[in-house]
Image (cartoon, rainbow, N blue to C red):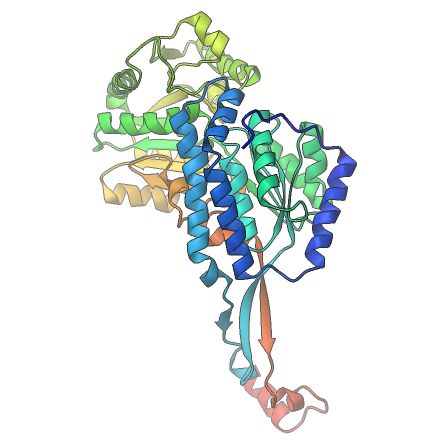
Length: 479
């Protein structure tokens, strides 16, 4: 194990094309991987990755400046192992061809649908969970029988070097390759003629990725973000809602695409909710000098962006409340942004225009649940929707009228961790799915096959002149 990983030099655009050509050539020169080959690949990846947890945590700590070891182990470690285990447990049944009826007119022919590997899948991973969001789609594509070309984020160079080192040990370079570099490499990577391309990142960059893939007609899966609303119902205990929303919001310093982005609270309970948040957060961080369990903002640019939201809110006269005392000099030096709420922002506030991606929580009061539903439905469809309510009819009313990438009722983030569920957005929050069986199918071509029998009536029915039985059949079908 290499404890002191060094970033791999930037991959040149021509090298990108040459590497993809090598991956494609290797695919064309051999049959699709068997079940045994795919299972062995996944097992090797799992074993090698698990053995490197310490190195992974060290890389993530270096990239973030400080990141909770527990959060790294859970979010970038355990989730990957769980996903691989789920693939291993279901792979044989997912690979099995499914029998289909060809229709009575074609009897005695038989038909099936066979999942086939697409070829070479490109995976573009983001910086917020740089290991998880690289290895889970990679493992899923490998399970589907594909080769993979991975482009990790340039904003987490140590994690990217960790991934390159890990994958170099597990796979030959004719099966898995890694490209490293900045925006210019990402742009060239997205323009390559992959058999499928998965991108995880912001909606703005997702539009560019889709445009870059369009000339090659490369199928794309876009896992984007957006502003995920949270609704607290009238009957839900406000302290429990505050505790669970705080977990969803503050995990990884709020740098989670499915984090609660803003909260609708019954008007009479707004102040009680803010106070419940304050009390809960104080219990999480009782030592005002110890923030070892609090993940920092990834870089100075993101820290300035988040600060600009708070400055804009203050300039608009909105109430901005910091829920945890942090020394200002320490905060700026370490990119440590304390949990902060912004009360009653309008759509003109910057904090309500972009995905926040940090520990800032706008809180909006409401009087009627129909007004909340109308607001959500007149904005971009979110990646996640959270409803805290014990009134089943009210929950069902929201679920049947609002469309989101995924939903958790009475908690947050869990729809991503539920290994049997697909994950993906809708519209501006993404397209396509991965995770679970849907991920396997996403990276497969569902090949329809008809097996004609030795003797068939089509040998006679489709040959002119159309007389006799053929003419009678057409008249019957026309009726």
